[in-house]
Length: 190
Image 1: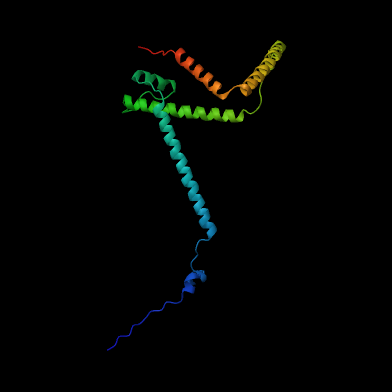
Image 2: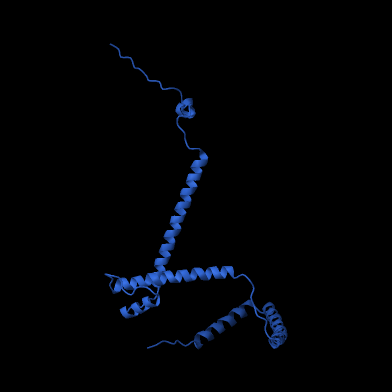
């Protein structure tokens, strides 16, 4: 008895590379490339926003840790009164009260920084007041006296630099550094 091997034939590969029959008959709708790209960009924007929020929260917590907050309970209560916040919330101890104050202070400082940035960005108009005529005359006289002297000093330094030997220059710098080191006095508290 010989067994014959039967092979199951599903069809050629050219059909696998083309659209399936169900899709070709429009029974199944696959997303197009543009909708996949749109979905990917929406996901990327959402992920970027989540990342920015996480970084902002981390920076805010770091700023809170470095913020100087009063340690005494009476001082904390006084500061909370200053901000118009409730002094004590039910079940809140001194530690929680201080932590709440820290959060409030950090929130107020970030709001203040944000408004300062907006004011600085919006304050592009040039604003000045005209000074007195005497002030203008004094500034002109100072400039007339100072500019020629500065020009002469620069000419002298350029001439000296061209004529000076590099080794002499290094030696002069070393002498000056030594002079500074000797002249320095350490001031410390005992």
